[in-house]
Length: 159
Image (cartoon, rainbow, N blue to C red; front, side, top):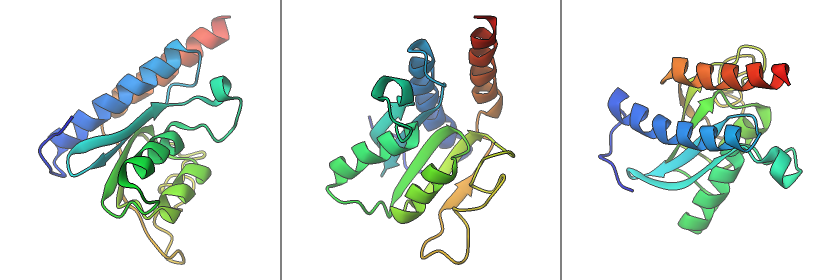
């Protein structure tokens, strides 16, 4: 699926909606509803929702899985021109993976001031001591991303 290449709000919202689709699938499967897509030149080259429970591994976060698909598509671990769209601000593991993979940009929906690492609790993506910094945009479709997560945890608490 190819879209016009742009860093416009409209384009960011289009790709965030795709990430939200992956997040909804994760929620439907009983996973924490985080979704991510990897985009290169206006094309989605990887995407996933969280699969921690399904895969029985703490590293099966949506961002990591989307980046793995993207690396296979590119044929390299370097993601110099890739943008990752994710429904919630990346954790330390995912932010670190983005830095190590040299992701160009991360766009997230819901900020996470408690454990987000793209400027929330920490700024791993922009830390000047790293060999690479990831450009960051937050708050894209924030309300939709928040509602999905809050609805999921309301249902979990009712059980």
